[in-house]
Amino acid sequence: MLKHYNIDGQDFSIAGEASSDFKRRLKKLGISPDVIRRVAIAMYEAEINTIIHGGGGECDAEVSNDKITVTFTDHGPGIKDIDLAMQEGYSTATEQIRELGFGAGMGLPNIKNYTDDMEIETEVGKGTVVRLIVKL
Amino acid sequence: MLLSEIKDIVKAEVLTGESENDLRNIDIHNACGSDMMSDVLAFVKDQALLLTGLINAQVIRTAEMMDILAICFVRGKTPPESVIELAKDLGMVVLRTEYPMYVACGELYVKGLEGGKNAKAL
Ligand SMILES: Nc1ncnc2c1ncn2[C@@H]1O[C@H](COP(=O)(O)OP(=O)(O)O)[C@@H](O)[C@H]1O
Ligand SMILES: [Mg+2]
Image 1 (spheres, rainbow over the protein chains, first blue to last red):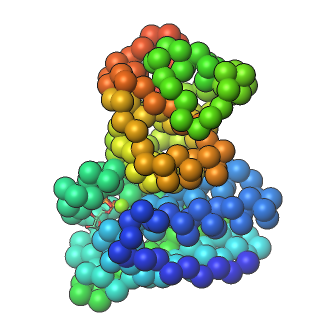
Image 2: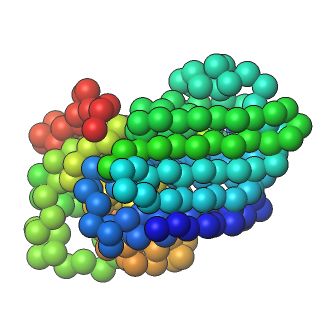
């Protein structure tokens, strides 16, 4: 299964719809609930980042024989220091984002914890690609 | 702890229309209280209740990703109708209490609803 989603960077109220849709599809495929939950949480954090930090973008989600791969691509500001960004509690989110319940600096660490593999390709001023893999 | 007991302990109101009987059929094993959704997402628990003072759609989305069964809004906050509708669509129970976060969590904790001190890994 291969799914493509556009991630709207303007409307925060619909943030998470891609993750919600993909989660429903994984359920229909009969994938184990633990795997689904790990994918859903990691994908949701990445979707939120694409919106609040990347200004929106795209998502490609794929189920193959042995794994689930979800890739988020944005053309936002990029990440200057990936090691710093990966630290628990590090966040550049604004007060406004914090009031919406995000910006605790736990998103990237959560993604790492819940996935088997995670890759970040980023260039300052160009954008960011975050790929997460969960084995079946 | 049954959701019906939880409702009584924090003197909550049900916003999603379930009856007393419906609530008696939902067993909650764990709870988590936070206004930061990433903190919630860091601690996976089974059969969990989420207590929060945040009332936007992302609370429901967060609960959805984690398979959380029920949400209790604290401090007498009422979410917009669209947020309640989203919870209904996903089959979640939404409660609302006048108690502030600390008191709601404290009352439930002393009555035996655990928080899962070490529940980080899946
Ligand atoms: N897609 C992205 N584009 C630009 N910066 C990002 C992106 N994703 C993450 N970051 C940077 O990494 C930091 C840490 O991300 P994260 O752990 O998800 O925490 P939070 O989203 O709560 O700030 C962010 O505050 C931001 O500076
Ligand atoms: Mg984040």
